[in-house]
Image (cartoon, rainbow, N blue to C red; front, side, top):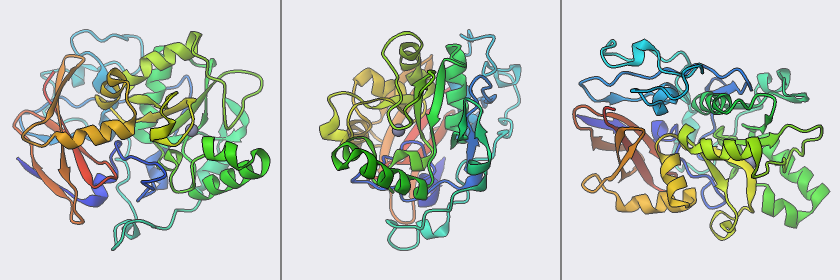
Length: 346
Ligand SMILES: [Zn+2]
């Protein structure tokens, strides 16, 4: 089956690289975001593979990392339901959550895509208190990332022990944060730990800062040691689609200092692949340039076969072939390419 993806759709993907050289081209709309609720993970659904290739909805992804033969976490809400197992209805259940980023503003794509207007701060961000941090706003993420973070926290019984400190930030909020930090901490500190407005992953809704639950939590640099529950989080993160985004020793690549508290949702199976390689997202995106449709990266994660390749992404989008029996997902890499992930049957 030949599939065509528009540039706007591609920018909804979870592999979009955001750094000082690659600013965001589209911001998530309000209804693409949802609250992270520690201890109350949302219930993701998993589509049963069908005979015909079809798009794998990002919001249907979260359950995908479960091992169908033997659900590893039978007591957690994200376990596979009977309807997700082979023999279930052909069509995946409609995702309970609205698909992500369907309403990207047209301004993100008209002509030169570099500087669309950032959306205003949604009301909900200001009105909903964060139950984990009573005097701070609610922590929001794009829906698949929020669901997966909830599942990850639940899988290690982290409720009350790990606190989501900062998730999605409105563009205006990142601007204020940067200015405040320059004033309070100086430019050198700020350039090390705070991304330029428009170049922050937090504006994408795919990044989360987590902190060990303590009486005092540093909003910019929460404590997240490599021991105990935090080490368990770090170890489990790749299986749930999250990577440690700014590892030690990679500042020459990421241009951000080591941030043990900052995780980025890139999705399954990419997070596990990045963790296994011990590379950064920048290096992973670069390496995938070698993987054309004729020479895909072949992976096996949790018993499922994947093929990953890159095609050039033009202004009118990109097209690619999906073999029978595969689900597909596609994401702009924000470097001129579309990364296609084919999901084989488990
Ligand atoms: Zn962060």
